[in-house]
Length: 231
Image 1 (cartoon, rainbow, N blue to C red):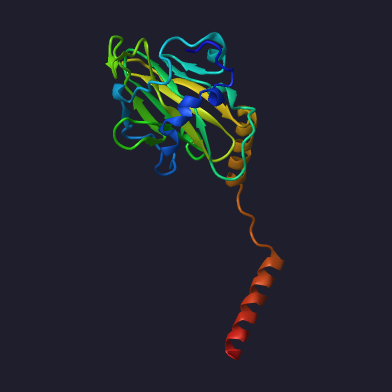
Image 2 (image 1 turned 60 degrees about the horizontal axis):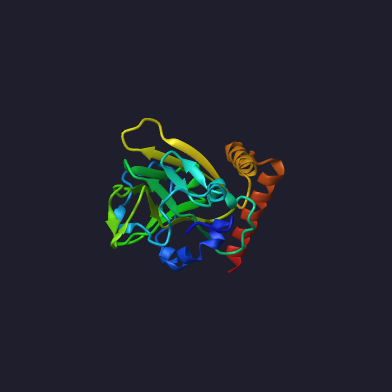
């Protein structure tokens, strides 16, 4: 099924767009605290239109691999032009290898600019900073079809602006999370440089008002008092 697949996976997986990713809703990501409890998406939400076997080499080059997790086509969006105006929704299906549960989380600094979107068979779709993905067992069957070695989930990102998304993948029973960075409509270097500039501006002390500023404030106050008396 993957034979002849175009390199730009996000545009060539037309069947994926027909599923309910556009319906992913919810509030925008907030704050920079670690999510206390991530919403769960399990084997029942496995997507039938996405192959569950190993990706061909060209498709893998355009994807982000983090241990047992593959974010399909996520690496292709760095230099892809962004349409101005409304927030961008980018399709990036996720493959999870059969085995332990994994938790995919946005880094704290990424949550102001991006949100994870994952479709669910039952209940509201996930839209937020984190999701817990439970892959199917190797011999599991969904809709009378064998799932295979990897469980595909319908997923993507909602972006407020060009950004570099930090992704953390925690594998149940293992130690430190696996970290990856994914550029969207900009290079990670340019985004990090802009973030440093913003931090430095916020940390600058506010200048004290000079003599002219104080004189102008007193004059404005006196003018307001005179105007009030005239009313």
